[in-house]
Length: 354
Image (cartoon, rainbow, N blue to C red; front, side, top):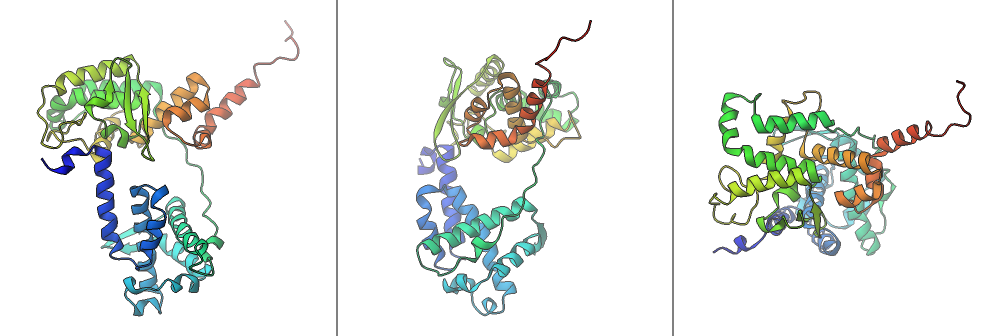
């Protein structure tokens, strides 16, 4: 049996990201290896890969737009290049990122995309500056783009009920979709009920193995962002949907290497994040055309409902796996403001005239 079959989903994803990382490093200046070795202890393979992609864009931009850099191969850029660049050079790069052409496609970045690219560049510069390998840090002088708060898109309680009904009966699906629906209905009901009933991330969901589900305590063991494990508990509706699916799953012969996976595709392989995104889109588009519902929006729906019922922002943060409660508070500020507005009506200073 191949070694990869021994890895769980998350270990396999890390392995794939490391391999992709090595391929990207082959296209970057040699001094970049020092940076990625330096941050390895406190970053995930996925984060380092994202940094590598963003830094590659930066060096490709310099190679294309900077007269000095154009004369060298990107792999031959010296580390001294970093301190020769100015704040203006980096600001021009960010402006270029608003819209650029690559691989035959026009690619655009709004504030959040540019903010992420600047964050990668700042970490990159900070590392070499603090190690005293460069004498100036122009990236630190570039202000982060102002991010406008995005409205939280979520399903209303009646829309949640309609969505789950739609997954069960498929009345609004096309003839072709109904053919697939006959084969996947039980799985889809379990998967969407689990997402809506626990608020777990889509990556946490697809990474579940059969052994991670414990019906005695009604809990699932998941791997959070950052690599740590946590137990998330589920209620009766999730339990019922999962038990129905587990009965079906027991009679399914998985493909080699996917024996442990909880949720399987029609090819009997571990279901992918993209497949879950597509099935959420398929069913939710029959419920609402005004909202673009993704697995993350189902997570927001759960978080909103939990906060409305409990009023405990720390509980919501804990259950959703937010390391910083301020992240949760920022997302659910609108609900907090609504509660504060209602508080104004609770206290009466004088009795109303009869």
